[in-house]
Length: 69
Image (cartoon, rainbow, N blue to C red; front, side):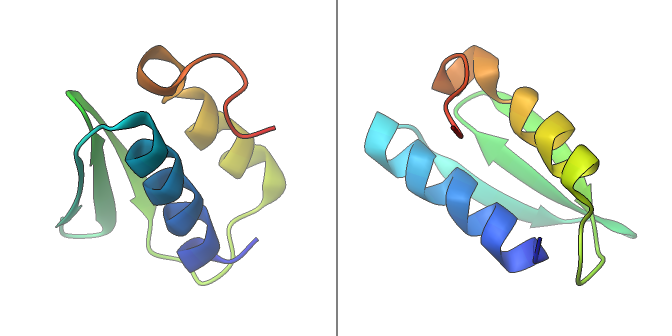
């Protein structure tokens, strides 16, 4: 899955949930902040499906269980 699509999906979900969304560029990763939860995503053009699922699962506390399905 494309990295931009992963970030966009989190952004749309945060916006529909009424939560703040922010992108913070770190040294080798991109930090994604939704509400008060922060997670990082590597700077690769393509992100494998297993990593995408794990990344999405990290935001379940603020966006709800299974929000990406």
